[in-house]
Length: 483
Image 1 (tube, rainbow, N blue to C red):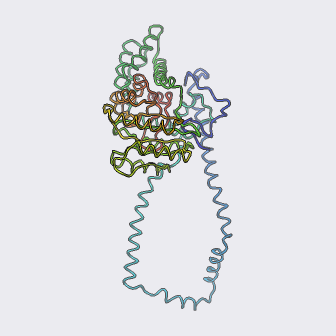
Image 2 (cartoon, rainbow, N blue to C red; image 1 turned 180 degrees about the vertical axis):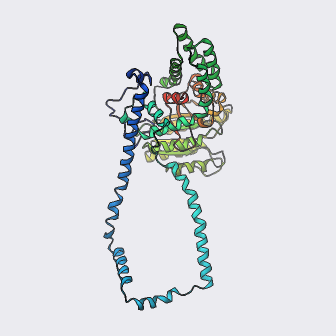
Image 3 (cartoon, one colour; image 1 turned 45 degrees about the vertical axis):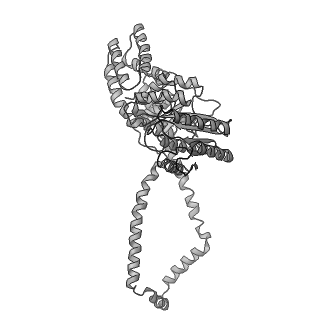
């Protein structure tokens, strides 16, 4: 019953022998199959909501059922039950006067020292109580997603899943929850980007002037020159052949943006980046300072544990102050062991050496390596990454090694330059795009894919431990251009 987030499969998935084929036309498939696509999509969303609500109620019922049998066998513990019944019978008997008299000396007035001690104990309990209450709010971050109201966020999420070929019985609460988070996380980018885009499109057929305004809008969102020229070049060719209305122009633009994002992924030959089962996988997290490498590593560890993988963290960032302690906190939150060297300025390669040995001894499937932040222009630090990679290749030649660059979306074109420099020096195999919720430059994902030629593997759209998910170009573009 574990939902595998890396492969996007879970209890609600269909039989793998007959997987549903994703819709090539996306949401347009609904328009072709029904004269009123909005009504059909709304009905589809209602059915999915009713099914998820029934599942949630069933889970609540199953959670409550084990409690009733446990309360019934309580009389099996004979001694406490007999004691309580005997005490109650004794209190009801009319002749316990001697016992009351004998017990009266125990209730003698307390001395001043005893009263002061009791008051101190009460004050200590009062002081400890707020501390427990203050720690309680951290628990909801680990809570499972719950079904909210049937609102526009749910209907939009359901439409996105339906457009990818999902059936009603394949919709999971995990996916609905994530799509809602993704849409909310891209709100800042969408406010500036989509508003200008829709204003430029208007209600009349597209003209070359409108396409020029679209070009300016895309460049302001840090989509990049190459991606903008490719997307709008195809749109200009379409305009030369036929009249294009705004709705068709928006659909065509989405199709071009998805193609740009998917090209590096298709070139890699690996649609989804997931650890291989029953095999050692080593993922190196690299990047400059302050982009969120350690936080991303902690979220990936949580994602791996909740997807059913055995995981281990190597705290190889031995230069930044409190970096090891931060990794250990993330490990405790996900119950993932951390291999670290407590000495100051320890050799990162030595930490990786110990982590690989521990993983091989325990049969761990995924090792996440946290590395120190470094500028792409520092040759000696880039050589250190090569040394770590050589250690991994020597100790575990059979391991599947991935080198993931963590990029801060708020850095825009500067992040693109980092990606291109790291790709040459560190042998990158993918990109993790973080902090999309705090930036209006979400279009940098297209620049990274088109100009750096790197596949985007994961995206982070929030500060919570669940706000990191595998990248899906269809969902990203729909969330980016949602009305």
